[in-house]
Amino acid sequence: MLSYRHAFHAGNFADVLKHWVLIECLEYLKQKEKPFVYYDTHSGPGMYALDSDYAQKNQEFKTGISLLWDQADLPKGLLQYCDCIRTQNPDDTLRHYPGSPSIAQALMREWDRLTLCELHRTEHEILSGQFAHDKRSEVWNEDGLNRTLKLLPPRERRGIVLIDPSYEMKEDYERVVEFLQAAHRKFAQGVYLLWYPVVERERIDRLEAALINSGIRNITLFELGIQADTEARGMTSSGMIVINPPWTLKQSIDDGLDYLAKKLEVDGFSTLRSEVLVGE
Image (cartoon, rainbow, N blue to C red; front, side, top):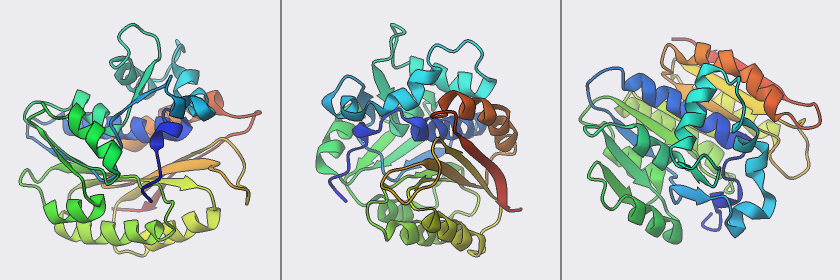
C-alpha cells in the first residue's frame, strides 16, 4: 500500500477525467458566497514534475494532458481544465502537473478550507511543505478514509470529498463503499467523488452494484477507456462516480466526453460511459 507513487501516472488519461470532474464541482460550489471544505483522502505530494525520473519512466502524461495541451478547439469544460493546468506552467510549456490538492488550492477562495490526507511518509512531507503557508489547509499523515470520517460533518455544511486510493489493496474496493455509506450518514448533502481504475471489470461491476444497493441516492457515473477490457495487467479505463453531483455536471461532461475520447483514443479505440446509476 505504501509503495504506490502516483508520479508514475501523473497527467495520464485517468487524471484528465478525474481532475476535469473535480474542477467542475469546485467551480459549481463557488457560485455561492458561502464557504465550503474540500477533503482529499489520498492527496499524494500535490505537484508532479513531468521531467522527473518517475514521470519519465512510462511518460503516461503523453496519453493524457499532452494530447490536449495545444488544442485550439477544446469544449468549454476541457478548456477550463487545461487553463487550470496552465496556471502551474506560466511559460506555457508543460513541465508540471498539479495533483488534486494543488488544483483545489488554486481554485478555492480565502474563506474556504482544505483538509488533505496522505499516509506515505515521503509524499506527506512534500505535501506538508507545499501547504505550510496556506492557512486554509490542514495536512494529515493518516489513513484518509478514517481521518475524513472523523471530521465529518463540516461546520460549513457544504463540501466535496475526493476519494481516489490506488486500489493496490483489493479490499479498497469494499472499503470505499463502506466509507461512502458511513460518510453519507454523517454528511448526506456532501458531494462525493470516487475515482476507480478498470483493471478487472468484474471488480467494477461489483463496486457499482454495491453502490446501487447501498441506499444512497443521486449517483452518476462517468468513464473513459482507451483500451478494451482485458485480463492482462494494466488499467484500460477509469471512471468517476459522483454522489450528489451538481445539476450542471452531467451536461457539462457530456458536452466534452466524446471529444475527449476521440483525442485520447489508442489505435483508434476508445469507450465512454455517462449514466445515472441511482436517481434522486
